[in-house]
Length: 260
Image (cartoon, rainbow, N blue to C red; front, side, top):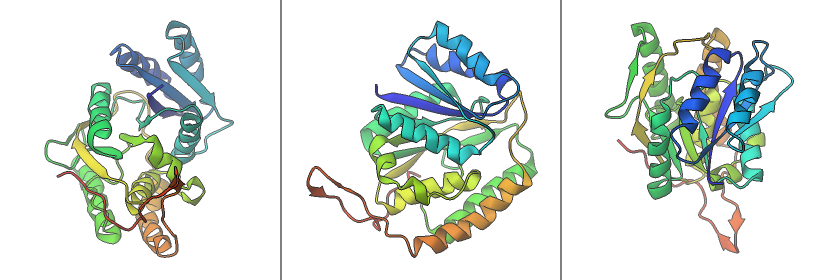
């Protein structure tokens, strides 16, 4: 068990079957965990039907209600760690992230990084089917985040990420405070402050064709205010790696790399 893709869902019945088939039909030994927040549209039932066709490759965790993106991923991270997966991925259900890019993230993480971010804003990265307002908001938010946190990641809100297991074992999930897009920033920030090597590789982000976007004003507000809170709280957190195998790991505050 090496590679697990975590896909959080809420009302993704139109997408979930297609995205699971696209991932598993590549036959690259990815397993997939769907963390569903009790979607009323039957998302979980669609996953259960596919479990019969792909035994031992698709897993499903259904939570009691809509609890947010961040808590869904943390639920999935803990599930993956308990089962010994070495490389754990975040991915959307709506084909904004191309399944064919999963292997690129995996190879980059396996060969030269602890965290690999599928980035819209490094050379070669781009967005498709976005209006100018959304582009300005997203790029402006990324620049704002870098200026406030000094974190060398050009796409800090990216949700297409590969983590080594050791990174997720080291991050204290109890100190991850956010559930929306600020969650993505906070996870990358924590990994960077802990001294893990974070790089970015270019992807093409395509706006969803089916279903409804989960973006709303509260998520945007959390992202704006959350960056300030993340940087403020970092002054009082002792970001240090754990001691493993009787070898004391280096303390956090060395900057990790971001690939331009």
